[in-house]
Image (cartoon, rainbow, N blue to C red):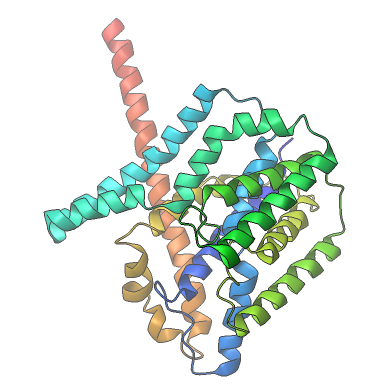
Length: 332
């Protein structure tokens, strides 16, 4: 049975990621502020939204843990995901080819296809999920929880305090994605329904703790594998799991554009251009202008990406229809 509250959560998560990029030092540079209280508020928002990518993986674990998908079906899903990346990467490269030069065009295509931590790790999870499902649907609740806890703490401690391994990169790695996938599976199979108010309080407390840690200059504060960030991710997910909303076809349809919005706006050659050159976030975020610049930026990017993906899907459907009609005509 489809949980329509998860569709709503996916849409909200996209806006959270857009906000994180708005604030990011090397993207939108939205942390710049002439007012101490405004700057503090921005960091608090960062502390609340940093879990967005984690929650996407938890959602996949929750939805997929009890499915018996074949390897072939999962490979087809991976090819579809990379297909979207390749199409948009190719289009962007063509644009830069005519506006800039061949070297920049080729470099963009390679970067947009290879250096995409979320897409690459997500596809790896899709690939190995049948094995994870087979193992973790057969173990009991206590062992399941013990494994998740030990893995979470071990990888965070190794990454943060012992040795900075390239394969464990602040949660931007497959190990953290596996843990998050298993957390989603555990919630689906074993977690009892909790109070929305309780989960909301935990979520806010985690945000406050992260803000305090950042103020203490702990560089690992916003690591995706930080246990506080993971707890925050679980709390936010649980809030929406406990919400029962009626089916809304618009929200359900909009949620299906989540991946495309992420792919399009994070393309190298698009990301900084949108924030810094189109919406000039590094200029308007310093003072009261952020009140209009922030919502204008993230809503415009979201709507623009949805329109682009809508046109791509219509074009694809049109080509499929044309191909089918051609085959029917040829058979006659």
